[in-house]
Structure formats: C-alpha cells, structure tokens
Length: 309
Length: 255
Image (cartoon, rainbow over all chains, first blue to last red; front, top):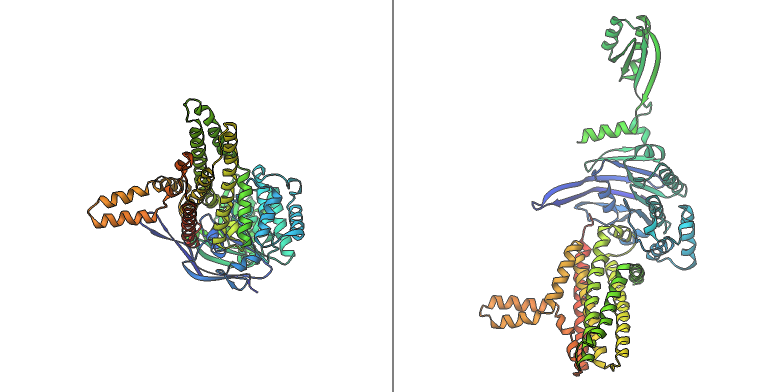
C-alpha cells in the first residue's frame, strides 16, 4: 500500500482584480513509502501547505491526481485512516482538552469506553493529563501544539500528516514532537511532515523532498542527497608559509586568507587535500589544523533554493 | 447523520460558554424588565406596552444573536482555521454546515426560551393574562430567526465575517419591507423594472410574514392556518437557502 502518491498534481490560484495566475504547485510527482518518516522541505511560500491541503481535500487541484492509501483523495472515507495537524492550529477555545479530543473522536464515529480510554492514552502521551479539565484558551502555544498532535492521532491513523509541527516551539517542545514522531514510526505508521527546521529533518527523516517555488527539486534519503562521503570542503590553518608557497597554494585551487603569521587555506575540492598538505610541508610551512566540512542538508537546501529562484 | 449531531452538540456546547451570548441575553432581559418602568408612564395601556416591549426585545436580541453568532460559526471557523481539522476528518462539507446550523438553532431556542421566561415573569408581575396570540407571535419570531441564521450561514460560506454580517443585516431590514417592492412594481409602467422588482420580492425572505406582534398585543385573533403557513414558508425558505449554501461550500477552496 502506498500512503501518498501524486501524479502531476498542480494548483493555480487567481489573485487580485486582474485575476493574475499564480502557480502554487507545479506538476508534483511524489511517492511516500509505507512506514517511513518523510520530510517535506521548502522555504515559506514554496507550496508545502498547498500540497498538504490538496491531499486532504481542503483545496481542489487544478490538474493532476493524488491517492492516499491507494484511494483517490476525493473519497472522504480515506480520512478515516488519516491524522492531520494543521500549521499554527487554533482550536475551539471554550472546550477542555478532554472534551476536545472526545469531540474529534466522535467525528470518526468512535464513542463509549474505547473512546474514553483512547483520550486518556493520548493525553498521557502528550503529557497533558494534568490539564485535561482546562479550557484550551488557557493553553500555552506548546500545549496547543501537543493537543493538536493528540487530535491527529485519535483515530489511530495509518498515515499522519503534520504541517510545520515544530514551528514556534522551544527546544524542549521540539524534542517532544520529534520523540512522538519517532514513536509513531515504531508503531508502523507513516509520517509526512513539512518543515523548514533542517536539523530536525536530518535527525529523524528517512527521506526528504525539497520543494522550491512549487516544484519538487530533489527527493531521496538525506545521505543520498548530501553525498555519501559527506565532506564538501576542507579548511586548514598553516603557519610559516612563504609568499611563494601561498601563490602555489592558490594555483592549486585553495582560497587564501591571511591571519597575521598564519594563513587559512580553504579547499572546495576535498580530493586535492593530500597534494596541498604536501605542498605546505615542502615550502617550509607547518600544519596547525585541518578541518573537513561536511555538506549538510542546509547546504543542499540553499543550493536548491538558489538554483530554483 | 450522527456526524451532524456531533457537530451540532459541539457548537451548542462551545457557544454556551461564550460570554458574549450571556451579555446579549442579559440585555434582552433588562429591556424586557424595563417595560414595567416604561408602562407606568402611560395611562391605561400598561398591558399593551409591556407586551409590546417584551415581544420586540425578544425579536431584536434574537436577530442580533442570530446574525453575530451565526456569522461566527462558519466564517470565523474558516478565518481561524479550525475548519481544517474538521474537514480533514471523515466529515462531508454539508455535514459540517448543517451541523453548525442545527447547533445554532438549538442555541437560539435556548436563548429565546430564557427571554420568554423573563417575559412571562414580567407578565405575571404585571398581572397580565397570557393569551394564545403571544405564544403564536413568539413561535413565529423563532421561525424568523431560523431563516436569518440560514441567510447568515449562506453568506459566511463564501465571504468574510464582516461582509457576511453586513449582508445579513441588510437582508433582515429589506426582508421586512419586501411588500413595498410589490407596491412599487405595481405603480411602474416599465415591464422590465416591474419584473425585476417582482423577482426580488419572491427571492428575498418575506420576514414581515412572521410578524404578528401587533395583533397578538392587541388581542386580535390570529388564524391557526396563517401560523401553519408561515411556519411552512420559513422552513421551506431556510431549506432552500441551506441547500444553496451547501452547494457553494462544497466548491470552496480553503486557502
């Protein structure tokens, strides 16, 4: 079973009086695999939320098709197996945490003792048992995000879709959300979430997709995308290098920055590091330090955004 | 069906805790109560003044609650994005809309009942007998509120809260004056204008149809058939408006 599949999914908006066309999502072809955590990356306005709204039927696609759990998205019954947390959620503020979850459970046709039990479990999972009788308007932002996660899980969904689940949270809140996402994967659920907080993605995602201006620029595992060796550049600090040696190093492709008696050499091609070290030693210099710089998802993301603009 | 009931009951519960509602009901009761003071200023017509003010208060505050709470139920939901979580559940859009409508109808029933209890209490204090005309007038006020809420829901299914409120308010005012459209049309020579005015007359809700406050206060008999036909008209009109709302809402994009 494929949790999410899209084929040429496109959404255009018509804005303003001139009805100017804006393509928010451009022919998206995406497949999310069973049981994985898929991170959907993109800058603000890249089309992440549009994609999610299309998948959940909040927007109608201009062209293309999509399937959730092998059924077309137009079929409302698929939502029986989907959990969703919108971005910056706002909920019924006069309901208590317990009533809120019960209400959402009832929308799935749940009720009675099983629902009461499920509500209790979820409140415990998101550490809100003490706040169960508190109205949501008295909740902090982090608490709202946690109760939002709980409502997304009330139906024990096979697919969980989270829109920016970590935005606006403090480091502890982010760690909590990360832990919950990982525990969902352990239960065999598929998690699809959008974000622009890259360290979180590197830490927990099995695969990522990068969306730039409505177009999917890259999809794959984090390792595949940033390269297996992972070393993108090397920086070395050298002392006692002669002017001739510096010129030679520049010729070999090193970027030179003088820092008093020391020189910082930066090499963008890591394979040439050996010959440069040799050169330094030959010209009477002394190697103070050598630091390899790994290519991070952030570098890749910035590259893709730059290329896509 | 059960999802409509779940949403209706949630709507009811949510709004029962909203303080704005209590304020409105409080002022409604205050106005009804003030009828005793005002009635002492007149000679001989005290009973009529009390009944007149009482019914008018129930009607006025009912309309205010219907418009402002009614608008909030759908368009605020969209503005605040609570609707995203609801529609991401296995809930059809029409179920959401009808659930909201039923919940609001329930709230209006309770509010009207509270004000009616206050009104009857004042009648008791003023030793005024309770005629069947008053009951009929109050029933039709409630039907009028159901029509207004349907209109409010329709506007809020496609436009912003502020615009919905203004449009619904406008329909409320015009709705009490539709008979004039007919009169005006009859006086005009131009067939086209006449046709347009006639069309508007049938399209807009005839809210004056539900107004039997005058006969009720003056003890003039109101025919049961009239009440039945007014109720039928109100229910049918609301049903059509809700159907249109559902169609509009079904196609709406939630940006």
